[in-house]
Image (cartoon, rainbow, N blue to C red; front, side, top):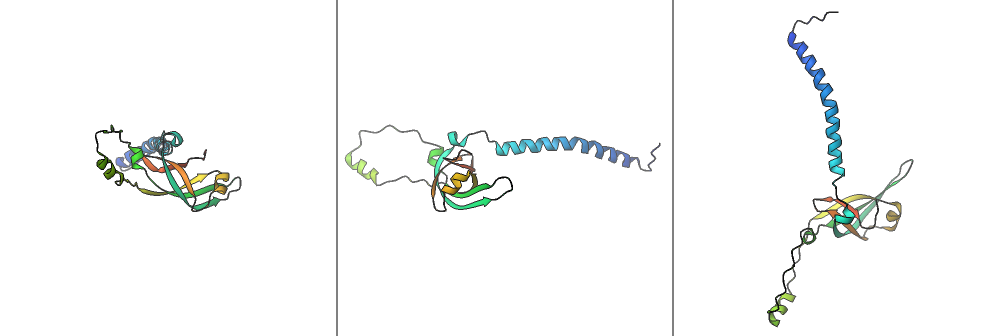
Length: 155
C-alpha cells in the first residue's frame, strides 16, 4: 500500500500530531497528579503544627448520598498574626518607675488578622453537636489560611 500525498508538509504535520499526542497524554496526567498532591497534601499536620484560633459556626449542610452522608459546617475565623510570627520575649526592665508601669497598663497592643470563611467536612457526631452561632476551636495553616480543621475533629 502506497501513500501518495501531494503536499509533503501534510505528512509531517500528521506525524508530528501523532507523536505529540502520544507524548502529551502521559505527561499531562503525571503533571495533573503532582498538582493535585501538592494542593491536597501540604505536608503539615494542622492538629500539631497549625495556628490555633477561635471561630464561629455560620451554617450546616448535609449532603445525602446512597452509601453514606457527608456533613459540612461553614465557619468564620480570623488569622492570628501574633501566633504566626511570635516575637521573642524581651527582658523585663526592673529599673522602670511605678509611673511608667502604670502608663503601660492602659496600652494594649491589639493585632487583628484577616477574616476567612470556609466550609469544612466533619464527622456526623460533630455535625449533630454544633449549631449556627456556636464557637469552635480551629487550627489553620499559616501559609494557606483556607486550610482549616476543627480542634476536636479527627478527620
